[in-house]
Length: 191
Image (cartoon, rainbow, N blue to C red):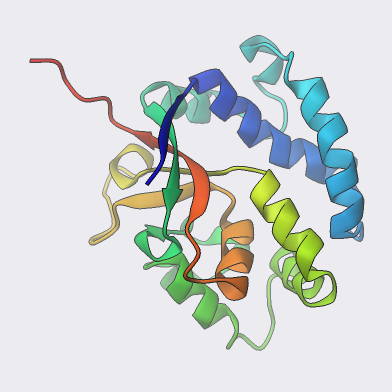
């Protein structure tokens, strides 16, 4: 496992990046088009202050406070060791109770997928390399379950705070491949 300290502001920018890219691109935009736009959007956001990030692209005060309570690292994490956000993208809560891998397996048995997830999976089928590159280029953000939920789900250590759709697509493509992501945990107390 690699581990590198990451600033809270960098995590907030990463969160805003995914939402900014979605608002900059049409829903029908290809993964290749999104990858091309990604660098431009990222370059713009790299200079943004916390004040400019607040309120933009879904980065609300509650999320900022949650991010500020965590100590952040970039780590390689196995997709079978973290859960998606409860009800991610309109999925039934019962599908989101265990690992990303289990959720991805359940998704493939749904008769109708939520629209955004359906687009991601369709993109994976039609332009696999670009979709995997896009999913890897926008950092997934995971946190200790106890930082996200007042009552942690049993058996879940880490939950995705952002990137559940991307994680599901990665799990369908390469379930055993660890993914580099930003991980927030409670800071260790100094004795």
